Image (cartoon, rainbow, N blue to C red):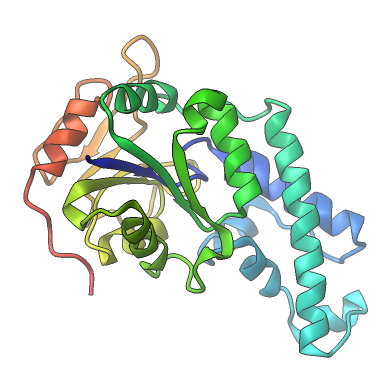
Length: 263
């Protein structure tokens, strides 16, 4: 049984700009921290996999002093964990409010894959409650219940390390030739390719200019036949969807030659 494995942020919904960033900044305000990330600054933070890791990047000696934080490393990490818990709650509340719609094609493709008996999964560095909130909002409770979710600190090394995808393959009981990944960032693509997985990239607002050379297919979105049209940006595997990425397109990718994975 083949599997379709989705990243969460930027793939299920364009959550980074309109979800995670305001949630981080609201958290900074609540905790009285002397920082607010601009869109440009957050774009740089996105090169760091994981929310706690992004928060930890604040902990320069200058910031620690300005924020009145303890100098003890363990105490600092406790503070980061507390910030991250609150940020996750703010973000989850934002998602459940319906503020961030699913990206084009997500609900359609998930419905089609589930009906065809494909396994469904999410592999993300975001906290699991955040991922499940986005998933339920984007595809509904019934379809969300059919997903296996691999998220957060389930592995120590975050993307671009391949660990989350290797973990997913092991727990799904699949080989690399039985699954296709949908990602939106270079970090995610590198993680999936290092695990040897064929990868579709749906570029998002923060990632359009990144390098997706090793992707099997790069599109503007998954598209919908009666809505937003998907533009094919690169197709080295030779699969060219017409306006929308359909399950038969993904099945064709699954049976196409696999490029050499990244070392």
